Amino acid sequence: MPKSRVRKKKVYTAPAELRPKTPESSHQPSPTWVPVLAVSLVVLGIAWLVSYYMTQGAFPIEAWGLWNLGAGFACLVASLLVLSRWR
Image (tube, rainbow, N blue to C red; front, top):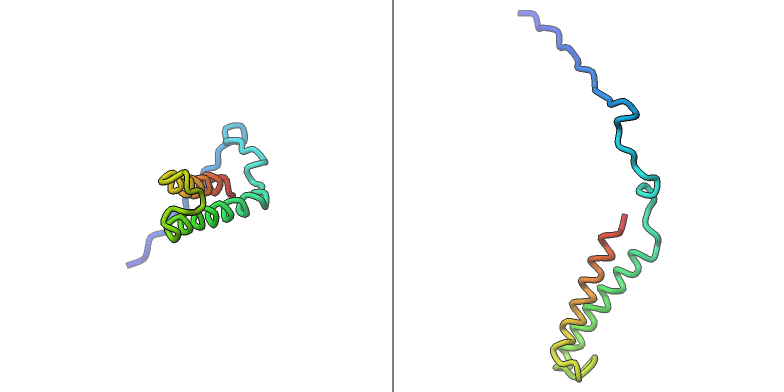
């Protein structure tokens, strides 16, 4: 039995005035300081938490007590916020 002809559909392209306009700045890569700052914050946060646990709360700041955990995790959360800006 002969095979029927397959019709190709034309791809629809919207008129130029209906297309969403993208700003030119969205196509530019991030500045170099963004990943550097993010990695620095991750390293600082992990170092803060590890030093707090290894010294049993005597270092980095003994007077802060359990707030040292908050400071370490705050560095890690700040790095996530900086990484969300990375393109």
